Amino acid sequence: MPKNFKEELLFTAVMAGLMVLVMAGYNIALADGFSHHFIREVLTGYPLALVVAAICDLGIIGPGVKYIFFHFIINDYMKKKQIRIALTISVMMVAGMVTLMSLFGMVVTQNFGDNALLTYLHTWIFNLFMALPLQLLIVGPIARAILGAVQKRTAPAENLAPKSVED
Image 1 (spheres, rainbow, N blue to C red):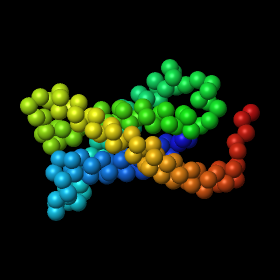
Image 2 (cartoon, rainbow, N blue to C red):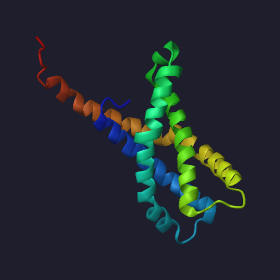
Image 3 (cartoon, helix red, strand yellow):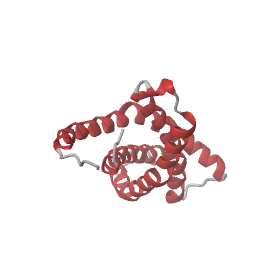
């Protein structure tokens, strides 16, 4: 888990960067198949989707999920192992991000179909079925490994820093 804002930014950059890239490719493949424009379409939409995902993550979903989790869900069983907390927060984050990013994708592509609500529900379900295992099995472990490596590298420097003494 990130311990400060700098680590939160790194973790979000890795997590959102990988999730947006794969999910953009997934949605384009679902809509258009693997045409000769596939890579160009993914890379063209990637920057805007990444910015929107980062804003949603850091400004809306992340704070909301953490508030709900730490005020209403966490219990002694979860506190025994850090991974339980990480996985629960991850599942909640995926649900929230899929909710917002599915809407974003529909707006950007102007894909509302005959019935916008049914199109949204279809998009949401298909995105959830891809995003949840992607996050739990691939992207989450990669992001936690990178964060852990950074925390190990910076830990000796933090231990060597002079401690302030309060009178």
